[in-house]
Amino acid sequence: MLPHPLEQADGLAVLAQHVDAAIAATPDILHDDDLQLSLFVLYGLNYGSVVAADDDWEWNPGLIAIRGAIERAFEAALRERVPAVPLPPANREAVAEALFELTKPSTGPSLSKYVARQATDEQLHELVIQRSVYTLKEADPHSWGIPRLYGRAKAAMMEIQADEYGGGNATRMHSAIYAGLMRLLGLDDRYGAYVNQVPAITLTSLNMSSMFGLNRRLRGAVCGHLAAFEMTSAIPSRYYGNGFRRLGYGEDVTWYYDEHVEADSVHEQIAGRDLAGSLAEDEPQLLPDILFGANACLTIDGWAGDHILASWEAGRSSLRVPLAPAERVSA
Image (cartoon, rainbow, N blue to C red):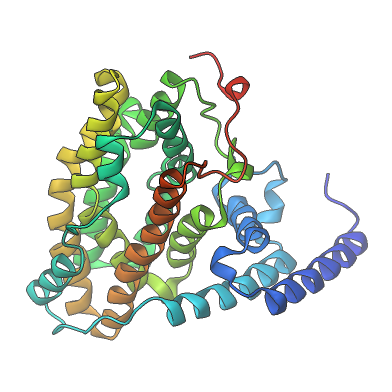
């Protein structure tokens, strides 16, 4: 039952004051545990199955105002910190070419290469926990963009998302495959089970895509984000699968990664040309946000991966609270 309206208003007013103070005081909202967790919980009211709350809270004006305050500071920090990208002509081929250039594989050290060659079993469990914050909701953040698009871009996003949701087969939904992977590893597959153990930058990655998807004015950014996400998935997925195989895991465990090697090799072409490229042709004013969303994906996910890799190379856990053996559940 919701509190009395007056009690609710008073409580929200106090919460708004605390949030405003936290925004004013934070040296870096992108790495702020409290603000990113707050935004994660607020977005959870839209997703459901994140926090236990009456459905009426989803569109509570006070909470929407608080979310908006965090979003404004969050977006401003992203636009300040994400490097600017030169804009190509607003046509399909030029935009696709620019995105493929932006997302081309690096020859340097990477988290996926580390996983393939030397990650321990404990580190693989940590990786699965870190990625569960997004992947157990795959591909919901981007799907918010579907009703905000039209024509060719909408059709392209639908084609990609249909595969993400298993093509009508619930057992082949990527989120369901990932949940099965977690169970096989003895991990808790309930959404948010490990949210208190992951660092802020892991939440920042999901919150960014949620913000892009839930705000119509950022529809260019969500399309650019999805394009970069798909274009940088196939090769790392192969490395991740190889890392599990190296430690003796079978196809039941590597299914999620093997699926993405194949699917995202196709999706990257659709995302680059038919989604981002077509959107740029149809709404050229969105071109800057398409490139911003793409590079924001690469930048923030890059930082998240760098955090994990640096932690492991230093001999420490990448989690805020390391996983205890007792926290593994029966498969």
